[in-house]
Structure formats: structure tokens, C-alpha cells
Image (cartoon, rainbow, N blue to C red; front, side, top):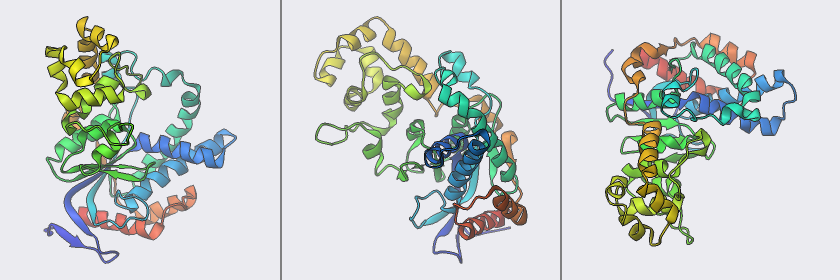
Length: 345
């Protein structure tokens, strides 16, 4: 059915933007929702923990869909034409092959291992419910949602994309058409406020600005403790930002003598790392682990990995009642889902 590029909604004064995509980082939202509600509800047995996990994921995901990826209280200026929900599946074998220590600490963390079964229960329940929604659900064996999301952004070919996640790795994808909604901070991150969020601050509170395309190398230098990825010895957030503000990272690999001038001081740890090859090894490894712009194997299989839901308004409303999901404004959610279903017809 032919449609114009913009469609006015009766429910509000926003429009549906053709070819725009809202992507939800499913596991990230599941954990964020669980920990947020766990602090408030203090579940004391496994049944209540599963309830908290299910409510947390559903509230996060459905609330974001109802608000079209905007913070609570914000009035969307446009609605996405398509919603994709991406999930991790299995273990991150591709990155563990590069670095066996990748995410190793979380799998021996008692808090993570004791709560993981409840979060996985919630994910399975929500995926079952999502089959009744006019959205796409993607996962791939032993693959992280990060790679699926990055593949969808690449596949969008420059069309507008909003990613919903608390994962700072996605900041490397921010650009003219790609923005991030961080649901815990309730903040949209785009080119305009990128450095207010992504860059470290001077003692006076000013961000240390470097070219946005160097954000990946900023992460490469500093590492990511949440994934158990060490950075280059001697670098903190401020020193990494300062050197990248002065020149690309590869310039320092070619001529390490430039580091002292960029830093404004001498660092024995940094000098040793660049002199003995440690820095080059870590930079190569961390770029391989952290880059979301280099195609992962799943990028070639996105259509086959996509499960398209079929809108079942009655069935989904019954699931909301059965699961006792009351934290989402139901009229707004159902209207948004009806609009997405109409676009598929």
C-alpha cells in the first residue's frame, strides 16, 4: 500500500517518519529494569525475583515503545515506523576467542550468577509476548545484541535510528542520523550534547573535546571494567581524551614521542607501554573487541535472524493483565502499537 513519507496521527501532533527505526537493547533493559525494581521492591524469594525481572523488562521496553524512544514527560516530535528488539543469546564466543578474559568477571560474580536465571526467565516470557506485537525480535546463537544492533544501524543506510540502551559502547555510533536514549539517565544523546555526556571534564567542569570519530579509541585506551577489558597502562579518562584531542591514536603508535607533548607531562607507564609493544597489542585487541562499525558475522544474516511479530491486540491485552503490567500508560502504548501494525498492513 502506497503511503506518504509522513503521516499525521489523530492521537497526538507527532508524525510517523518513514524508514526510521527504534532499536531496543533487550538484555540491557532487562538488567537495568531488574536492578531498578529490586532496590524498590526487595524481593525475598525466587518467585518474587522472577516477578520483579518480568515487570522490570516489560516496563522498560513497553514504556520506551509507548514514548517512541523519548524520555518520560517528553512529547515526541516524530514516531518510528519500525521497532526492533535485540537480545543476547548464549555466550559471546566471538569476543572470547579474541580475549578469553572477556566478561569473565561477571560469570564468577555471585550477584550476577544468582540473578541471571530470573532475568533470563523474564526475557523468555517477554519474547513470547512480543510475538503478539508488530515489532521485530532478533537474536543469534552465541552472539551479543550489540552486534545485531550495530548491523541494523549499518543496514539502515543513513536513515534515522534511535538506540535504547545504557551501554556506552553505542556512543561510537552517534552521528547525524543515529542517537541514543539512555533509559536510566532518561537522556537522549545526539551530536548536540555528545561531549557533555561522553567526554571527561576538566577541574573547572569543561568537557575535554576530541573528534567524535575517535570515541572508539577513547574506549580502547581506557578499557571497560564492566566487560573485563583492560586499557593501555597509564591511561585514565582525562589523559586519553587529551591525547585524542591532539591527534589520532595511530599517530602516537607511529611516533610515541608525541605523547608527552599531548599530555603536557611525562608518564613512565605510558612510555613503557608504547616502547615495548604492549600498547600496540592492547589497542589492536581492544579495537577488535569494542568496534561496532566492523561487520560481525551476524550482519549477513539479519533477515534470517528476524522474527516478525503479528499484532494481536486482544491477546496482548490479556497478557498485560495476567502479568500485572500496570506501570505503562496502556492507551498510549496500544495506540502506538496499532500505528505500527497499520504500517505493516
